[in-house]
Length: 537
Ligand code: SF4
Ligand code: SF3
Image (cartoon, rainbow, N blue to C red; front, top):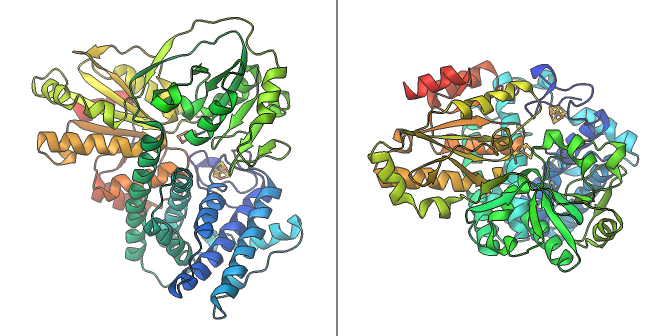
């Protein structure tokens, strides 16, 4: 086993025996074998496309399968083995339909019968540093592979909302095939990584269009953190379409639906907030779910990451969707939420009302840019000195308190923009406002990074400056592979001076880190005091 794709990787190097996330050796090898199989499928699909045979289901499948290998998505060996078999089945169908015989060895791979033997096959093909000829090229290969997983997640969501682009799918297949080439130079791989950033920008744009055209532009919305007496269902993950389907199916059934984790921004979308039984938000970021889920008095639906291995005390109440899976946890394959609704109706739910705090969400690009004049004026008059985008993933490490402290120490004449689950370190703080502009603006999920980019680009245009000259600093926290894809997008856009934490990715070699420091002035976080001083002077 060799996995270093996320921020909590063992000893900051790699998980080699079992994942810190709970991923087993077995699942890790199967996921590596799945990537291997997808390389073969991509080669065949590209060759078939050149002959005019194009299969949209292949692209959808590649996205879902790659998404299943993202951190905290799928821990179920049977499900991953099934993805491997389906990959090969699809590959063989295309081969015969397009009459392809001249394919490489990887495109002739035959999966073993048993899980045990598949695991052995995975061990043989997994990408490992000791097999690599050049450490820096290997580092960039992993960077591209991890970004591909993030891109796959975004493409999966956007395709479900009817938004797709062949350029994205083509890049994904070409990049998968290139992972197995050893004739590409370091420069080629740097370009591939930046290309991944460009493609990720496009796919985030598609997802933004999918979400806003389907559910409307988010509007600033107050979200209760308390609860109502009554039956309850909790929905976590990122997929708004799943939430929408559940809301339709639970309407009029006397059940309140609560968001968890990255679902919080759902409350800002007009077509979701119109459901009166979408009541409030429960809990915080993913790493606290074992405690929070155990205490929730109803079923829990995981639409995407981040799933932690469920405790026995609540495992029978968890339902997974799409690429998500865990052995022994019920999976809903077809958007039919009847088993979830049935369970909610049988369970006690909350027995009394609890009036808790309220938080604000819904400050996506449309809402923020509708008051752009006011913002520009406030900056020109000196009322707003600086903007900080403090966002990204959360995680369990105590050093992540940096982000809480940072926000607490941001001077009163500065505004904090945030997105993704990292916000739970400070989302319920009352930071007040500057002339009616709230000092804490929740743009949305990590999936809404496009919205943040659009806000920055629009402000740069309004001030007639380069985006790097704006009074804006990016203080990013990362954990999984969507964050890798977003980071590459920011670099592709030429955004400099990003502070990254809580640690730098284990898969980046010192040479690659130096390159990023020199070209983009990308730097690790230090302490809130020092970083604030360096930024504000
Ligand atoms: Fe380790 Fe992260 Fe890989 Fe899990 S996803 S095995 S924690 S590096
Ligand atoms: Fe969080 Fe998993 Fe990345 Fe969507 S839910 S930001 S870590």
